[in-house]
Image (cartoon, rainbow, N blue to C red; front, side):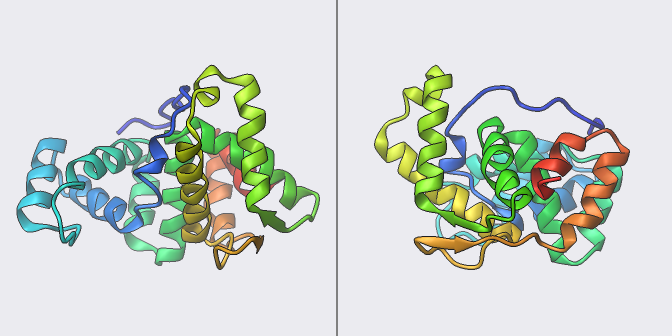
Length: 204
């Protein structure tokens, strides 16, 4: 893995099928730390059903997604993920998602970060829908998303916010809070020149 791997610069809807996936992400990171390459890790995950899925149908797709996210971690973040409590690991997973998915990064910057900065700590499903409406005016890719895709993306974004600790429940109006573990990770991100992601998480 290379430090400060470049942010993915393409808008996409790939989070519809690959949401937070923290448990899967941590399993893949453990296999990377043990020295396995992608092919070896995939074979082990499938043969031993390490993801504990009832069906093997979606394993390959999820392996590819979390493997790509793991490549954004440097050695320090990888070790921190594996050795610190899950609250910290979930924030590292969030950072990897921000690197992996440009559209979600912009959502965090333009909606979540702004709400935190201005102390308007209530998120509604309409806020997310309005974000996609604005992006559709700026991006041909987003403009081409079907309504069903937008609905699935909205659910994925809420699931990621829940998984990382920003919101407690999927309700019509959701109360935002900053997960305390972010401060531990954001300080390190600033040190290694990843200020954009620290700011997207913290709103400052």
